[in-house]
Image 1 (cartoon, rainbow, N blue to C red):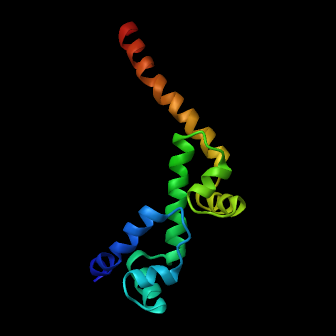
Image 2 (cartoon, rainbow, N blue to C red):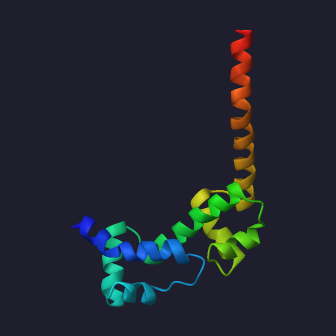
Image 3 (cartoon, rainbow, N blue to C red):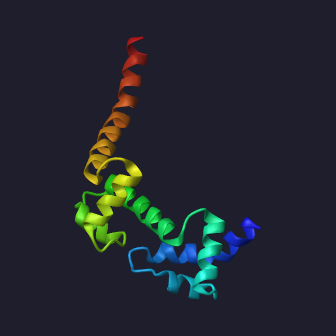
Length: 130
């Protein structure tokens, strides 16, 4: 049954993927699949284990992680780009999920990338000297 519920919600997930930077309300989402708001909220929670708003915010945070890792955009732009009207709210949710600020996350991602780029060089050096 859960699989059927997820199939029923597929249009919502597709819509989120293409419109996460826009305002998406529970009302809009429920209309997309032809359910009343209460029935939609119940089905969504059953299928995903999260409320629609929690799921949408988690999705937006994940998109923010990608932008922090792969761009040099300021956090204020990233928060707007992933659909948060308020940078402070983005920061609050980010800290709740990641236990660090967006800036701290970016710094750690950069450090990890440097290590990954250096490790093939170190391995090559070890082979030649070993």
